[in-house]
Length: 151
Image (cartoon, rainbow, N blue to C red):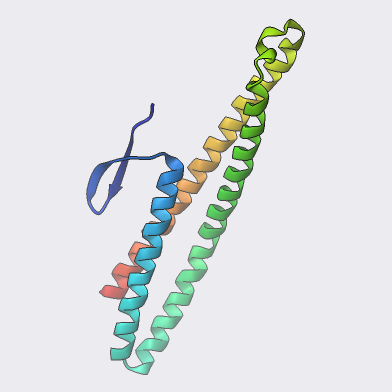
């Protein structure tokens, strides 16, 4: 069994869950950070002169443009993960048939199903790695944005 650790807030802690749970946790954390940033931004905007607000809006728009390719990559990886997971479930349903293992005339089918399962697992792993890298890059850029806005 794999053991997962989560590095966040300058701490490393055991993480009780799998990669899907981590994806959900990371998404919720990012949304919370966005809400906090919006709240802080609205507080600062009410205190800023209009010229500063215009520059801040322009900087935010530029950052959104930088984030767009990463978001697209993350979303594509998420779709690939969903497709691979569905295909894996279909193959594993075939592999769940006990006759597949006992009927000597179905050995070729068993071999093919096992090969397909391995290939799908590899695709799923690659998509998860792509998704994770994009999520981490997005989180880093958003943290950078928050730090620059708070400076």
